[in-house]
Amino acid sequence: MRLRTETLQVSHQLLVALAAFDYLTPSQAARLLGKERSLTYIRETFRSLAAEKLALSLAGRSVTIPRVFTLTAKGREYAGMLWKPASSRRFRPSEEHDKVRNPYFLRHTLAVTDVLIAARLLAKSTPGITLARMYTERALKRKISVAIPQQRATGGEPHVRQICLEPDAGVLFRVTESWHNPPETWEDFFFIEVYRNLPPAEWHFKQKVQGYVATVDTGRHEALFHTPALAIAVMTVSESEQMAATLKRWTEETVHEIQQPEQEQRFFFRNVADPAAVSPEALFLSPLWEQAFGSAKTSLLVLAEEP
Image (cartoon, rainbow, N blue to C red; front, side, top):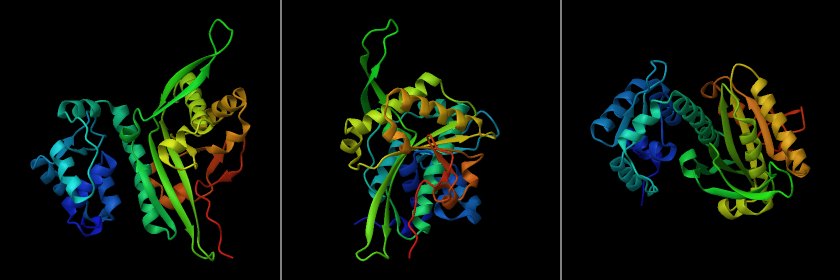
């Protein structure tokens, strides 16, 4: 029988955390484990794991980018004995070092990880909320393939194109209202899309919106993730609200073009200057998000009030 992660020593907790999140900075790991006052010790423990070839230490080119750690093949195997067997994947240190030389990749990955950490902490601190499943970008890569109609440049009948949706992350929450008799439980599944500084290409974003709608229409989402629940949380990380407004407008245009108005309630938009500085409750439970075709603020997770 495997031990609960809370009972493991810190070095083992860090290995398990890396297995779940793929990439972590010491400050992210300290926040995740509730050990913000022990950041120096967390850094030293990460260095020890790297010295034992269980974790790989990755440094970006810029001094403003923090050091990041990921599991080696040996560390992934060890974490599997502590927690659960990890999916096998090719591990090449040179490829990992190449990734962090790209500041866009690293800053984007860390922003997505901040959102996933918030989801984990929300479930720990809020009665009735369980984080049933969590998917990193790596876990979702090449997982969701769907066919969408594409208009030919020369006109005429549209043809079908197969695309691969690759969300930045995914979370499945189970919410239980214990004051009901019997208690009521429902699920909320969110794909997380994070955009930093600059918006994506318009055609690519609109194609992705169309793909998300198709995963519902075809039953592909439910078949892959075993739940009919689906919403897409589009978060921009910027000093301005403009990018979030642009992505919302593109979503509305796409939903209108494909004549799927019933799907508009699945898309949520919000700008956050720094995901690491936002509390889990403010991120998921506060009414600071907008849905497509609406301006009223709402929360991602809506909890019914006890009568």
